[in-house]
Image 1 (cartoon, helix red, strand yellow):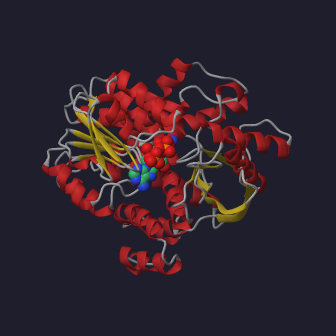
Image 2 (cartoon, protein in one colour; image 1 turned 45 degrees about the vertical axis):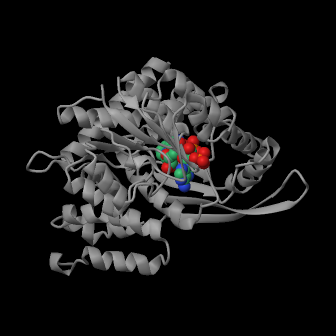
Image 3 (cartoon, protein in one colour; image 1 turned 90 degrees about the vertical axis):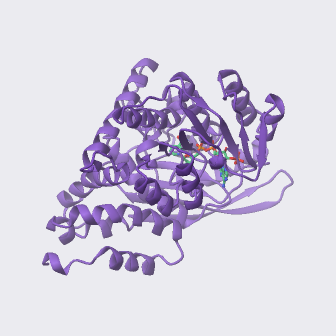
Amino acid sequence: MAVSDHVNLEEFMNGLRRRNPGETEFHQAVYEVAANVFDFIADKEIYHEQQILRRIAEPDRIISFRVCWEDDNGNIRVNRGYRVQNNNSIGPYKGGLRFHPSVNQSILKFLAFEQTFKNSLTGLPMGGGKGGADFNPKGKSNNEIMRFCQSFMTELHRHVGEDTDVPAGDIGVGAREIGYLFGQWKRLTNKFTGTLTGKGREYGGSPIRTEATGYGTVYMLQDMLKKAGHDVEGKSCLVSGSGNVATYAIEKVNQLGGKAVTASDSSGFIYDPHGIDDERLAYLMDLKNNRRGRIEEYANEWGCEFHAGKRPWGVKADVALPCATQNEISQKEAQTLIANGCMAVSEGANMPTEQEGIHDFTKARVLFAPSKAANAGGVAISGLEMSQNSARITWKEEELQALLRNIMGDIHERCAEYGQTKEGYVDYVKGANIAGFIKVADAMIAYGVV
Ligand code: NDP
């Protein structure tokens, strides 16, 4: 095919929308990558000839299944479970499970697609996948959670395995759920292998997996600031969320001398100008992890503001770390952050910034680390959990801390290499998309048409 015969970005996206009707999150995620990749491959015939982007944007398979379970009152409940196996060109499918009422095929396809590039960026041999269910763990008893996890795994176990597909946690799936899921997998297969990551330390979990995503997000921030001649020390940070990623991001901000002044949950956000220091962070972690409380209780405890139903992006600060969920920074909120002098954004959550917001950040030359680079620390340690499980050893915490720091530094370098602009600004979105794409694309070319 001659170069002039190639479909352009708009034609490619029209085809994708036609084939995947109504899947807006998936369209958004593919567009974000395709916009950069189309430019990069303009003069690289092989990627066109081999239809690489079209193939990466078509999941290898999507498994959808019924999950029946019995609640504490003896009622039969029915949910829908999924596993999207997007691409295994550079390693077994790898990506988390999300239990949240908003879960649908579009969201999981976007997450599995993103995961493919993120896992490639880590430099470790992992393909991309994602799964979950439209199950709401909120308000459920321990026994109900256990029964749900067991039923979910009863179907899922046919499709996963240490060399095939290795799920992990995500929203609504923490250490407790991974324990129930792994317990059922072990019972059904009569094997003890590293088929799930994020396991408890007593049964094959890796040191620092819990901290890795939040820490990595802040390392990425640190490297971007450093390259631009700045430091985390003394910077005020807006953090959204109060779950795993948010709380460990706050911990690392504190360790590096910054000051996190907000945290949130789905009910609103707290603004604490004193800073969420270590003592207050310990309270927040206990509130959210052990007592499953609401963020307003933090405001009552420490005498600060609670803004019901709002997000923190209107507060003036140096840096933003969105760590809750997708599309939580609208274009208008991005513009407010820019107007308030925000100099850097590092995305702890997956795709938290709307497309137009990313565009505005880039135009305003805000340092912007997209999620597939900024939050890759979690899956990187998961990849190392897989290695430890295969070798039946456990590395020391200090070794893993150093590995995490190095991996995030390498990701920053790779993004900077492909995202450097002539006037010195680094477009990390472009850098991450291209660096993530090349490795997967070249492996696909090596396999031929499969
Ligand atoms: P958690 O379930 O631990 O925490 C999620 C947090 O986000 C909670 O505070 C939750 O509030 C809040 N939240 C969820 N949905 C909304 C919403 N619609 N509006 C406002 N707040 C919301 O999840 P994680 O911290 O693990 O994950 C957060 C993000 O990071 C997700 O995008 C996830 O995909 C991504 N991520 C996580 C990784 C990990 O290692 N955990 C790895 C890579 C990415 P509430 O308590 O009210 O529900």
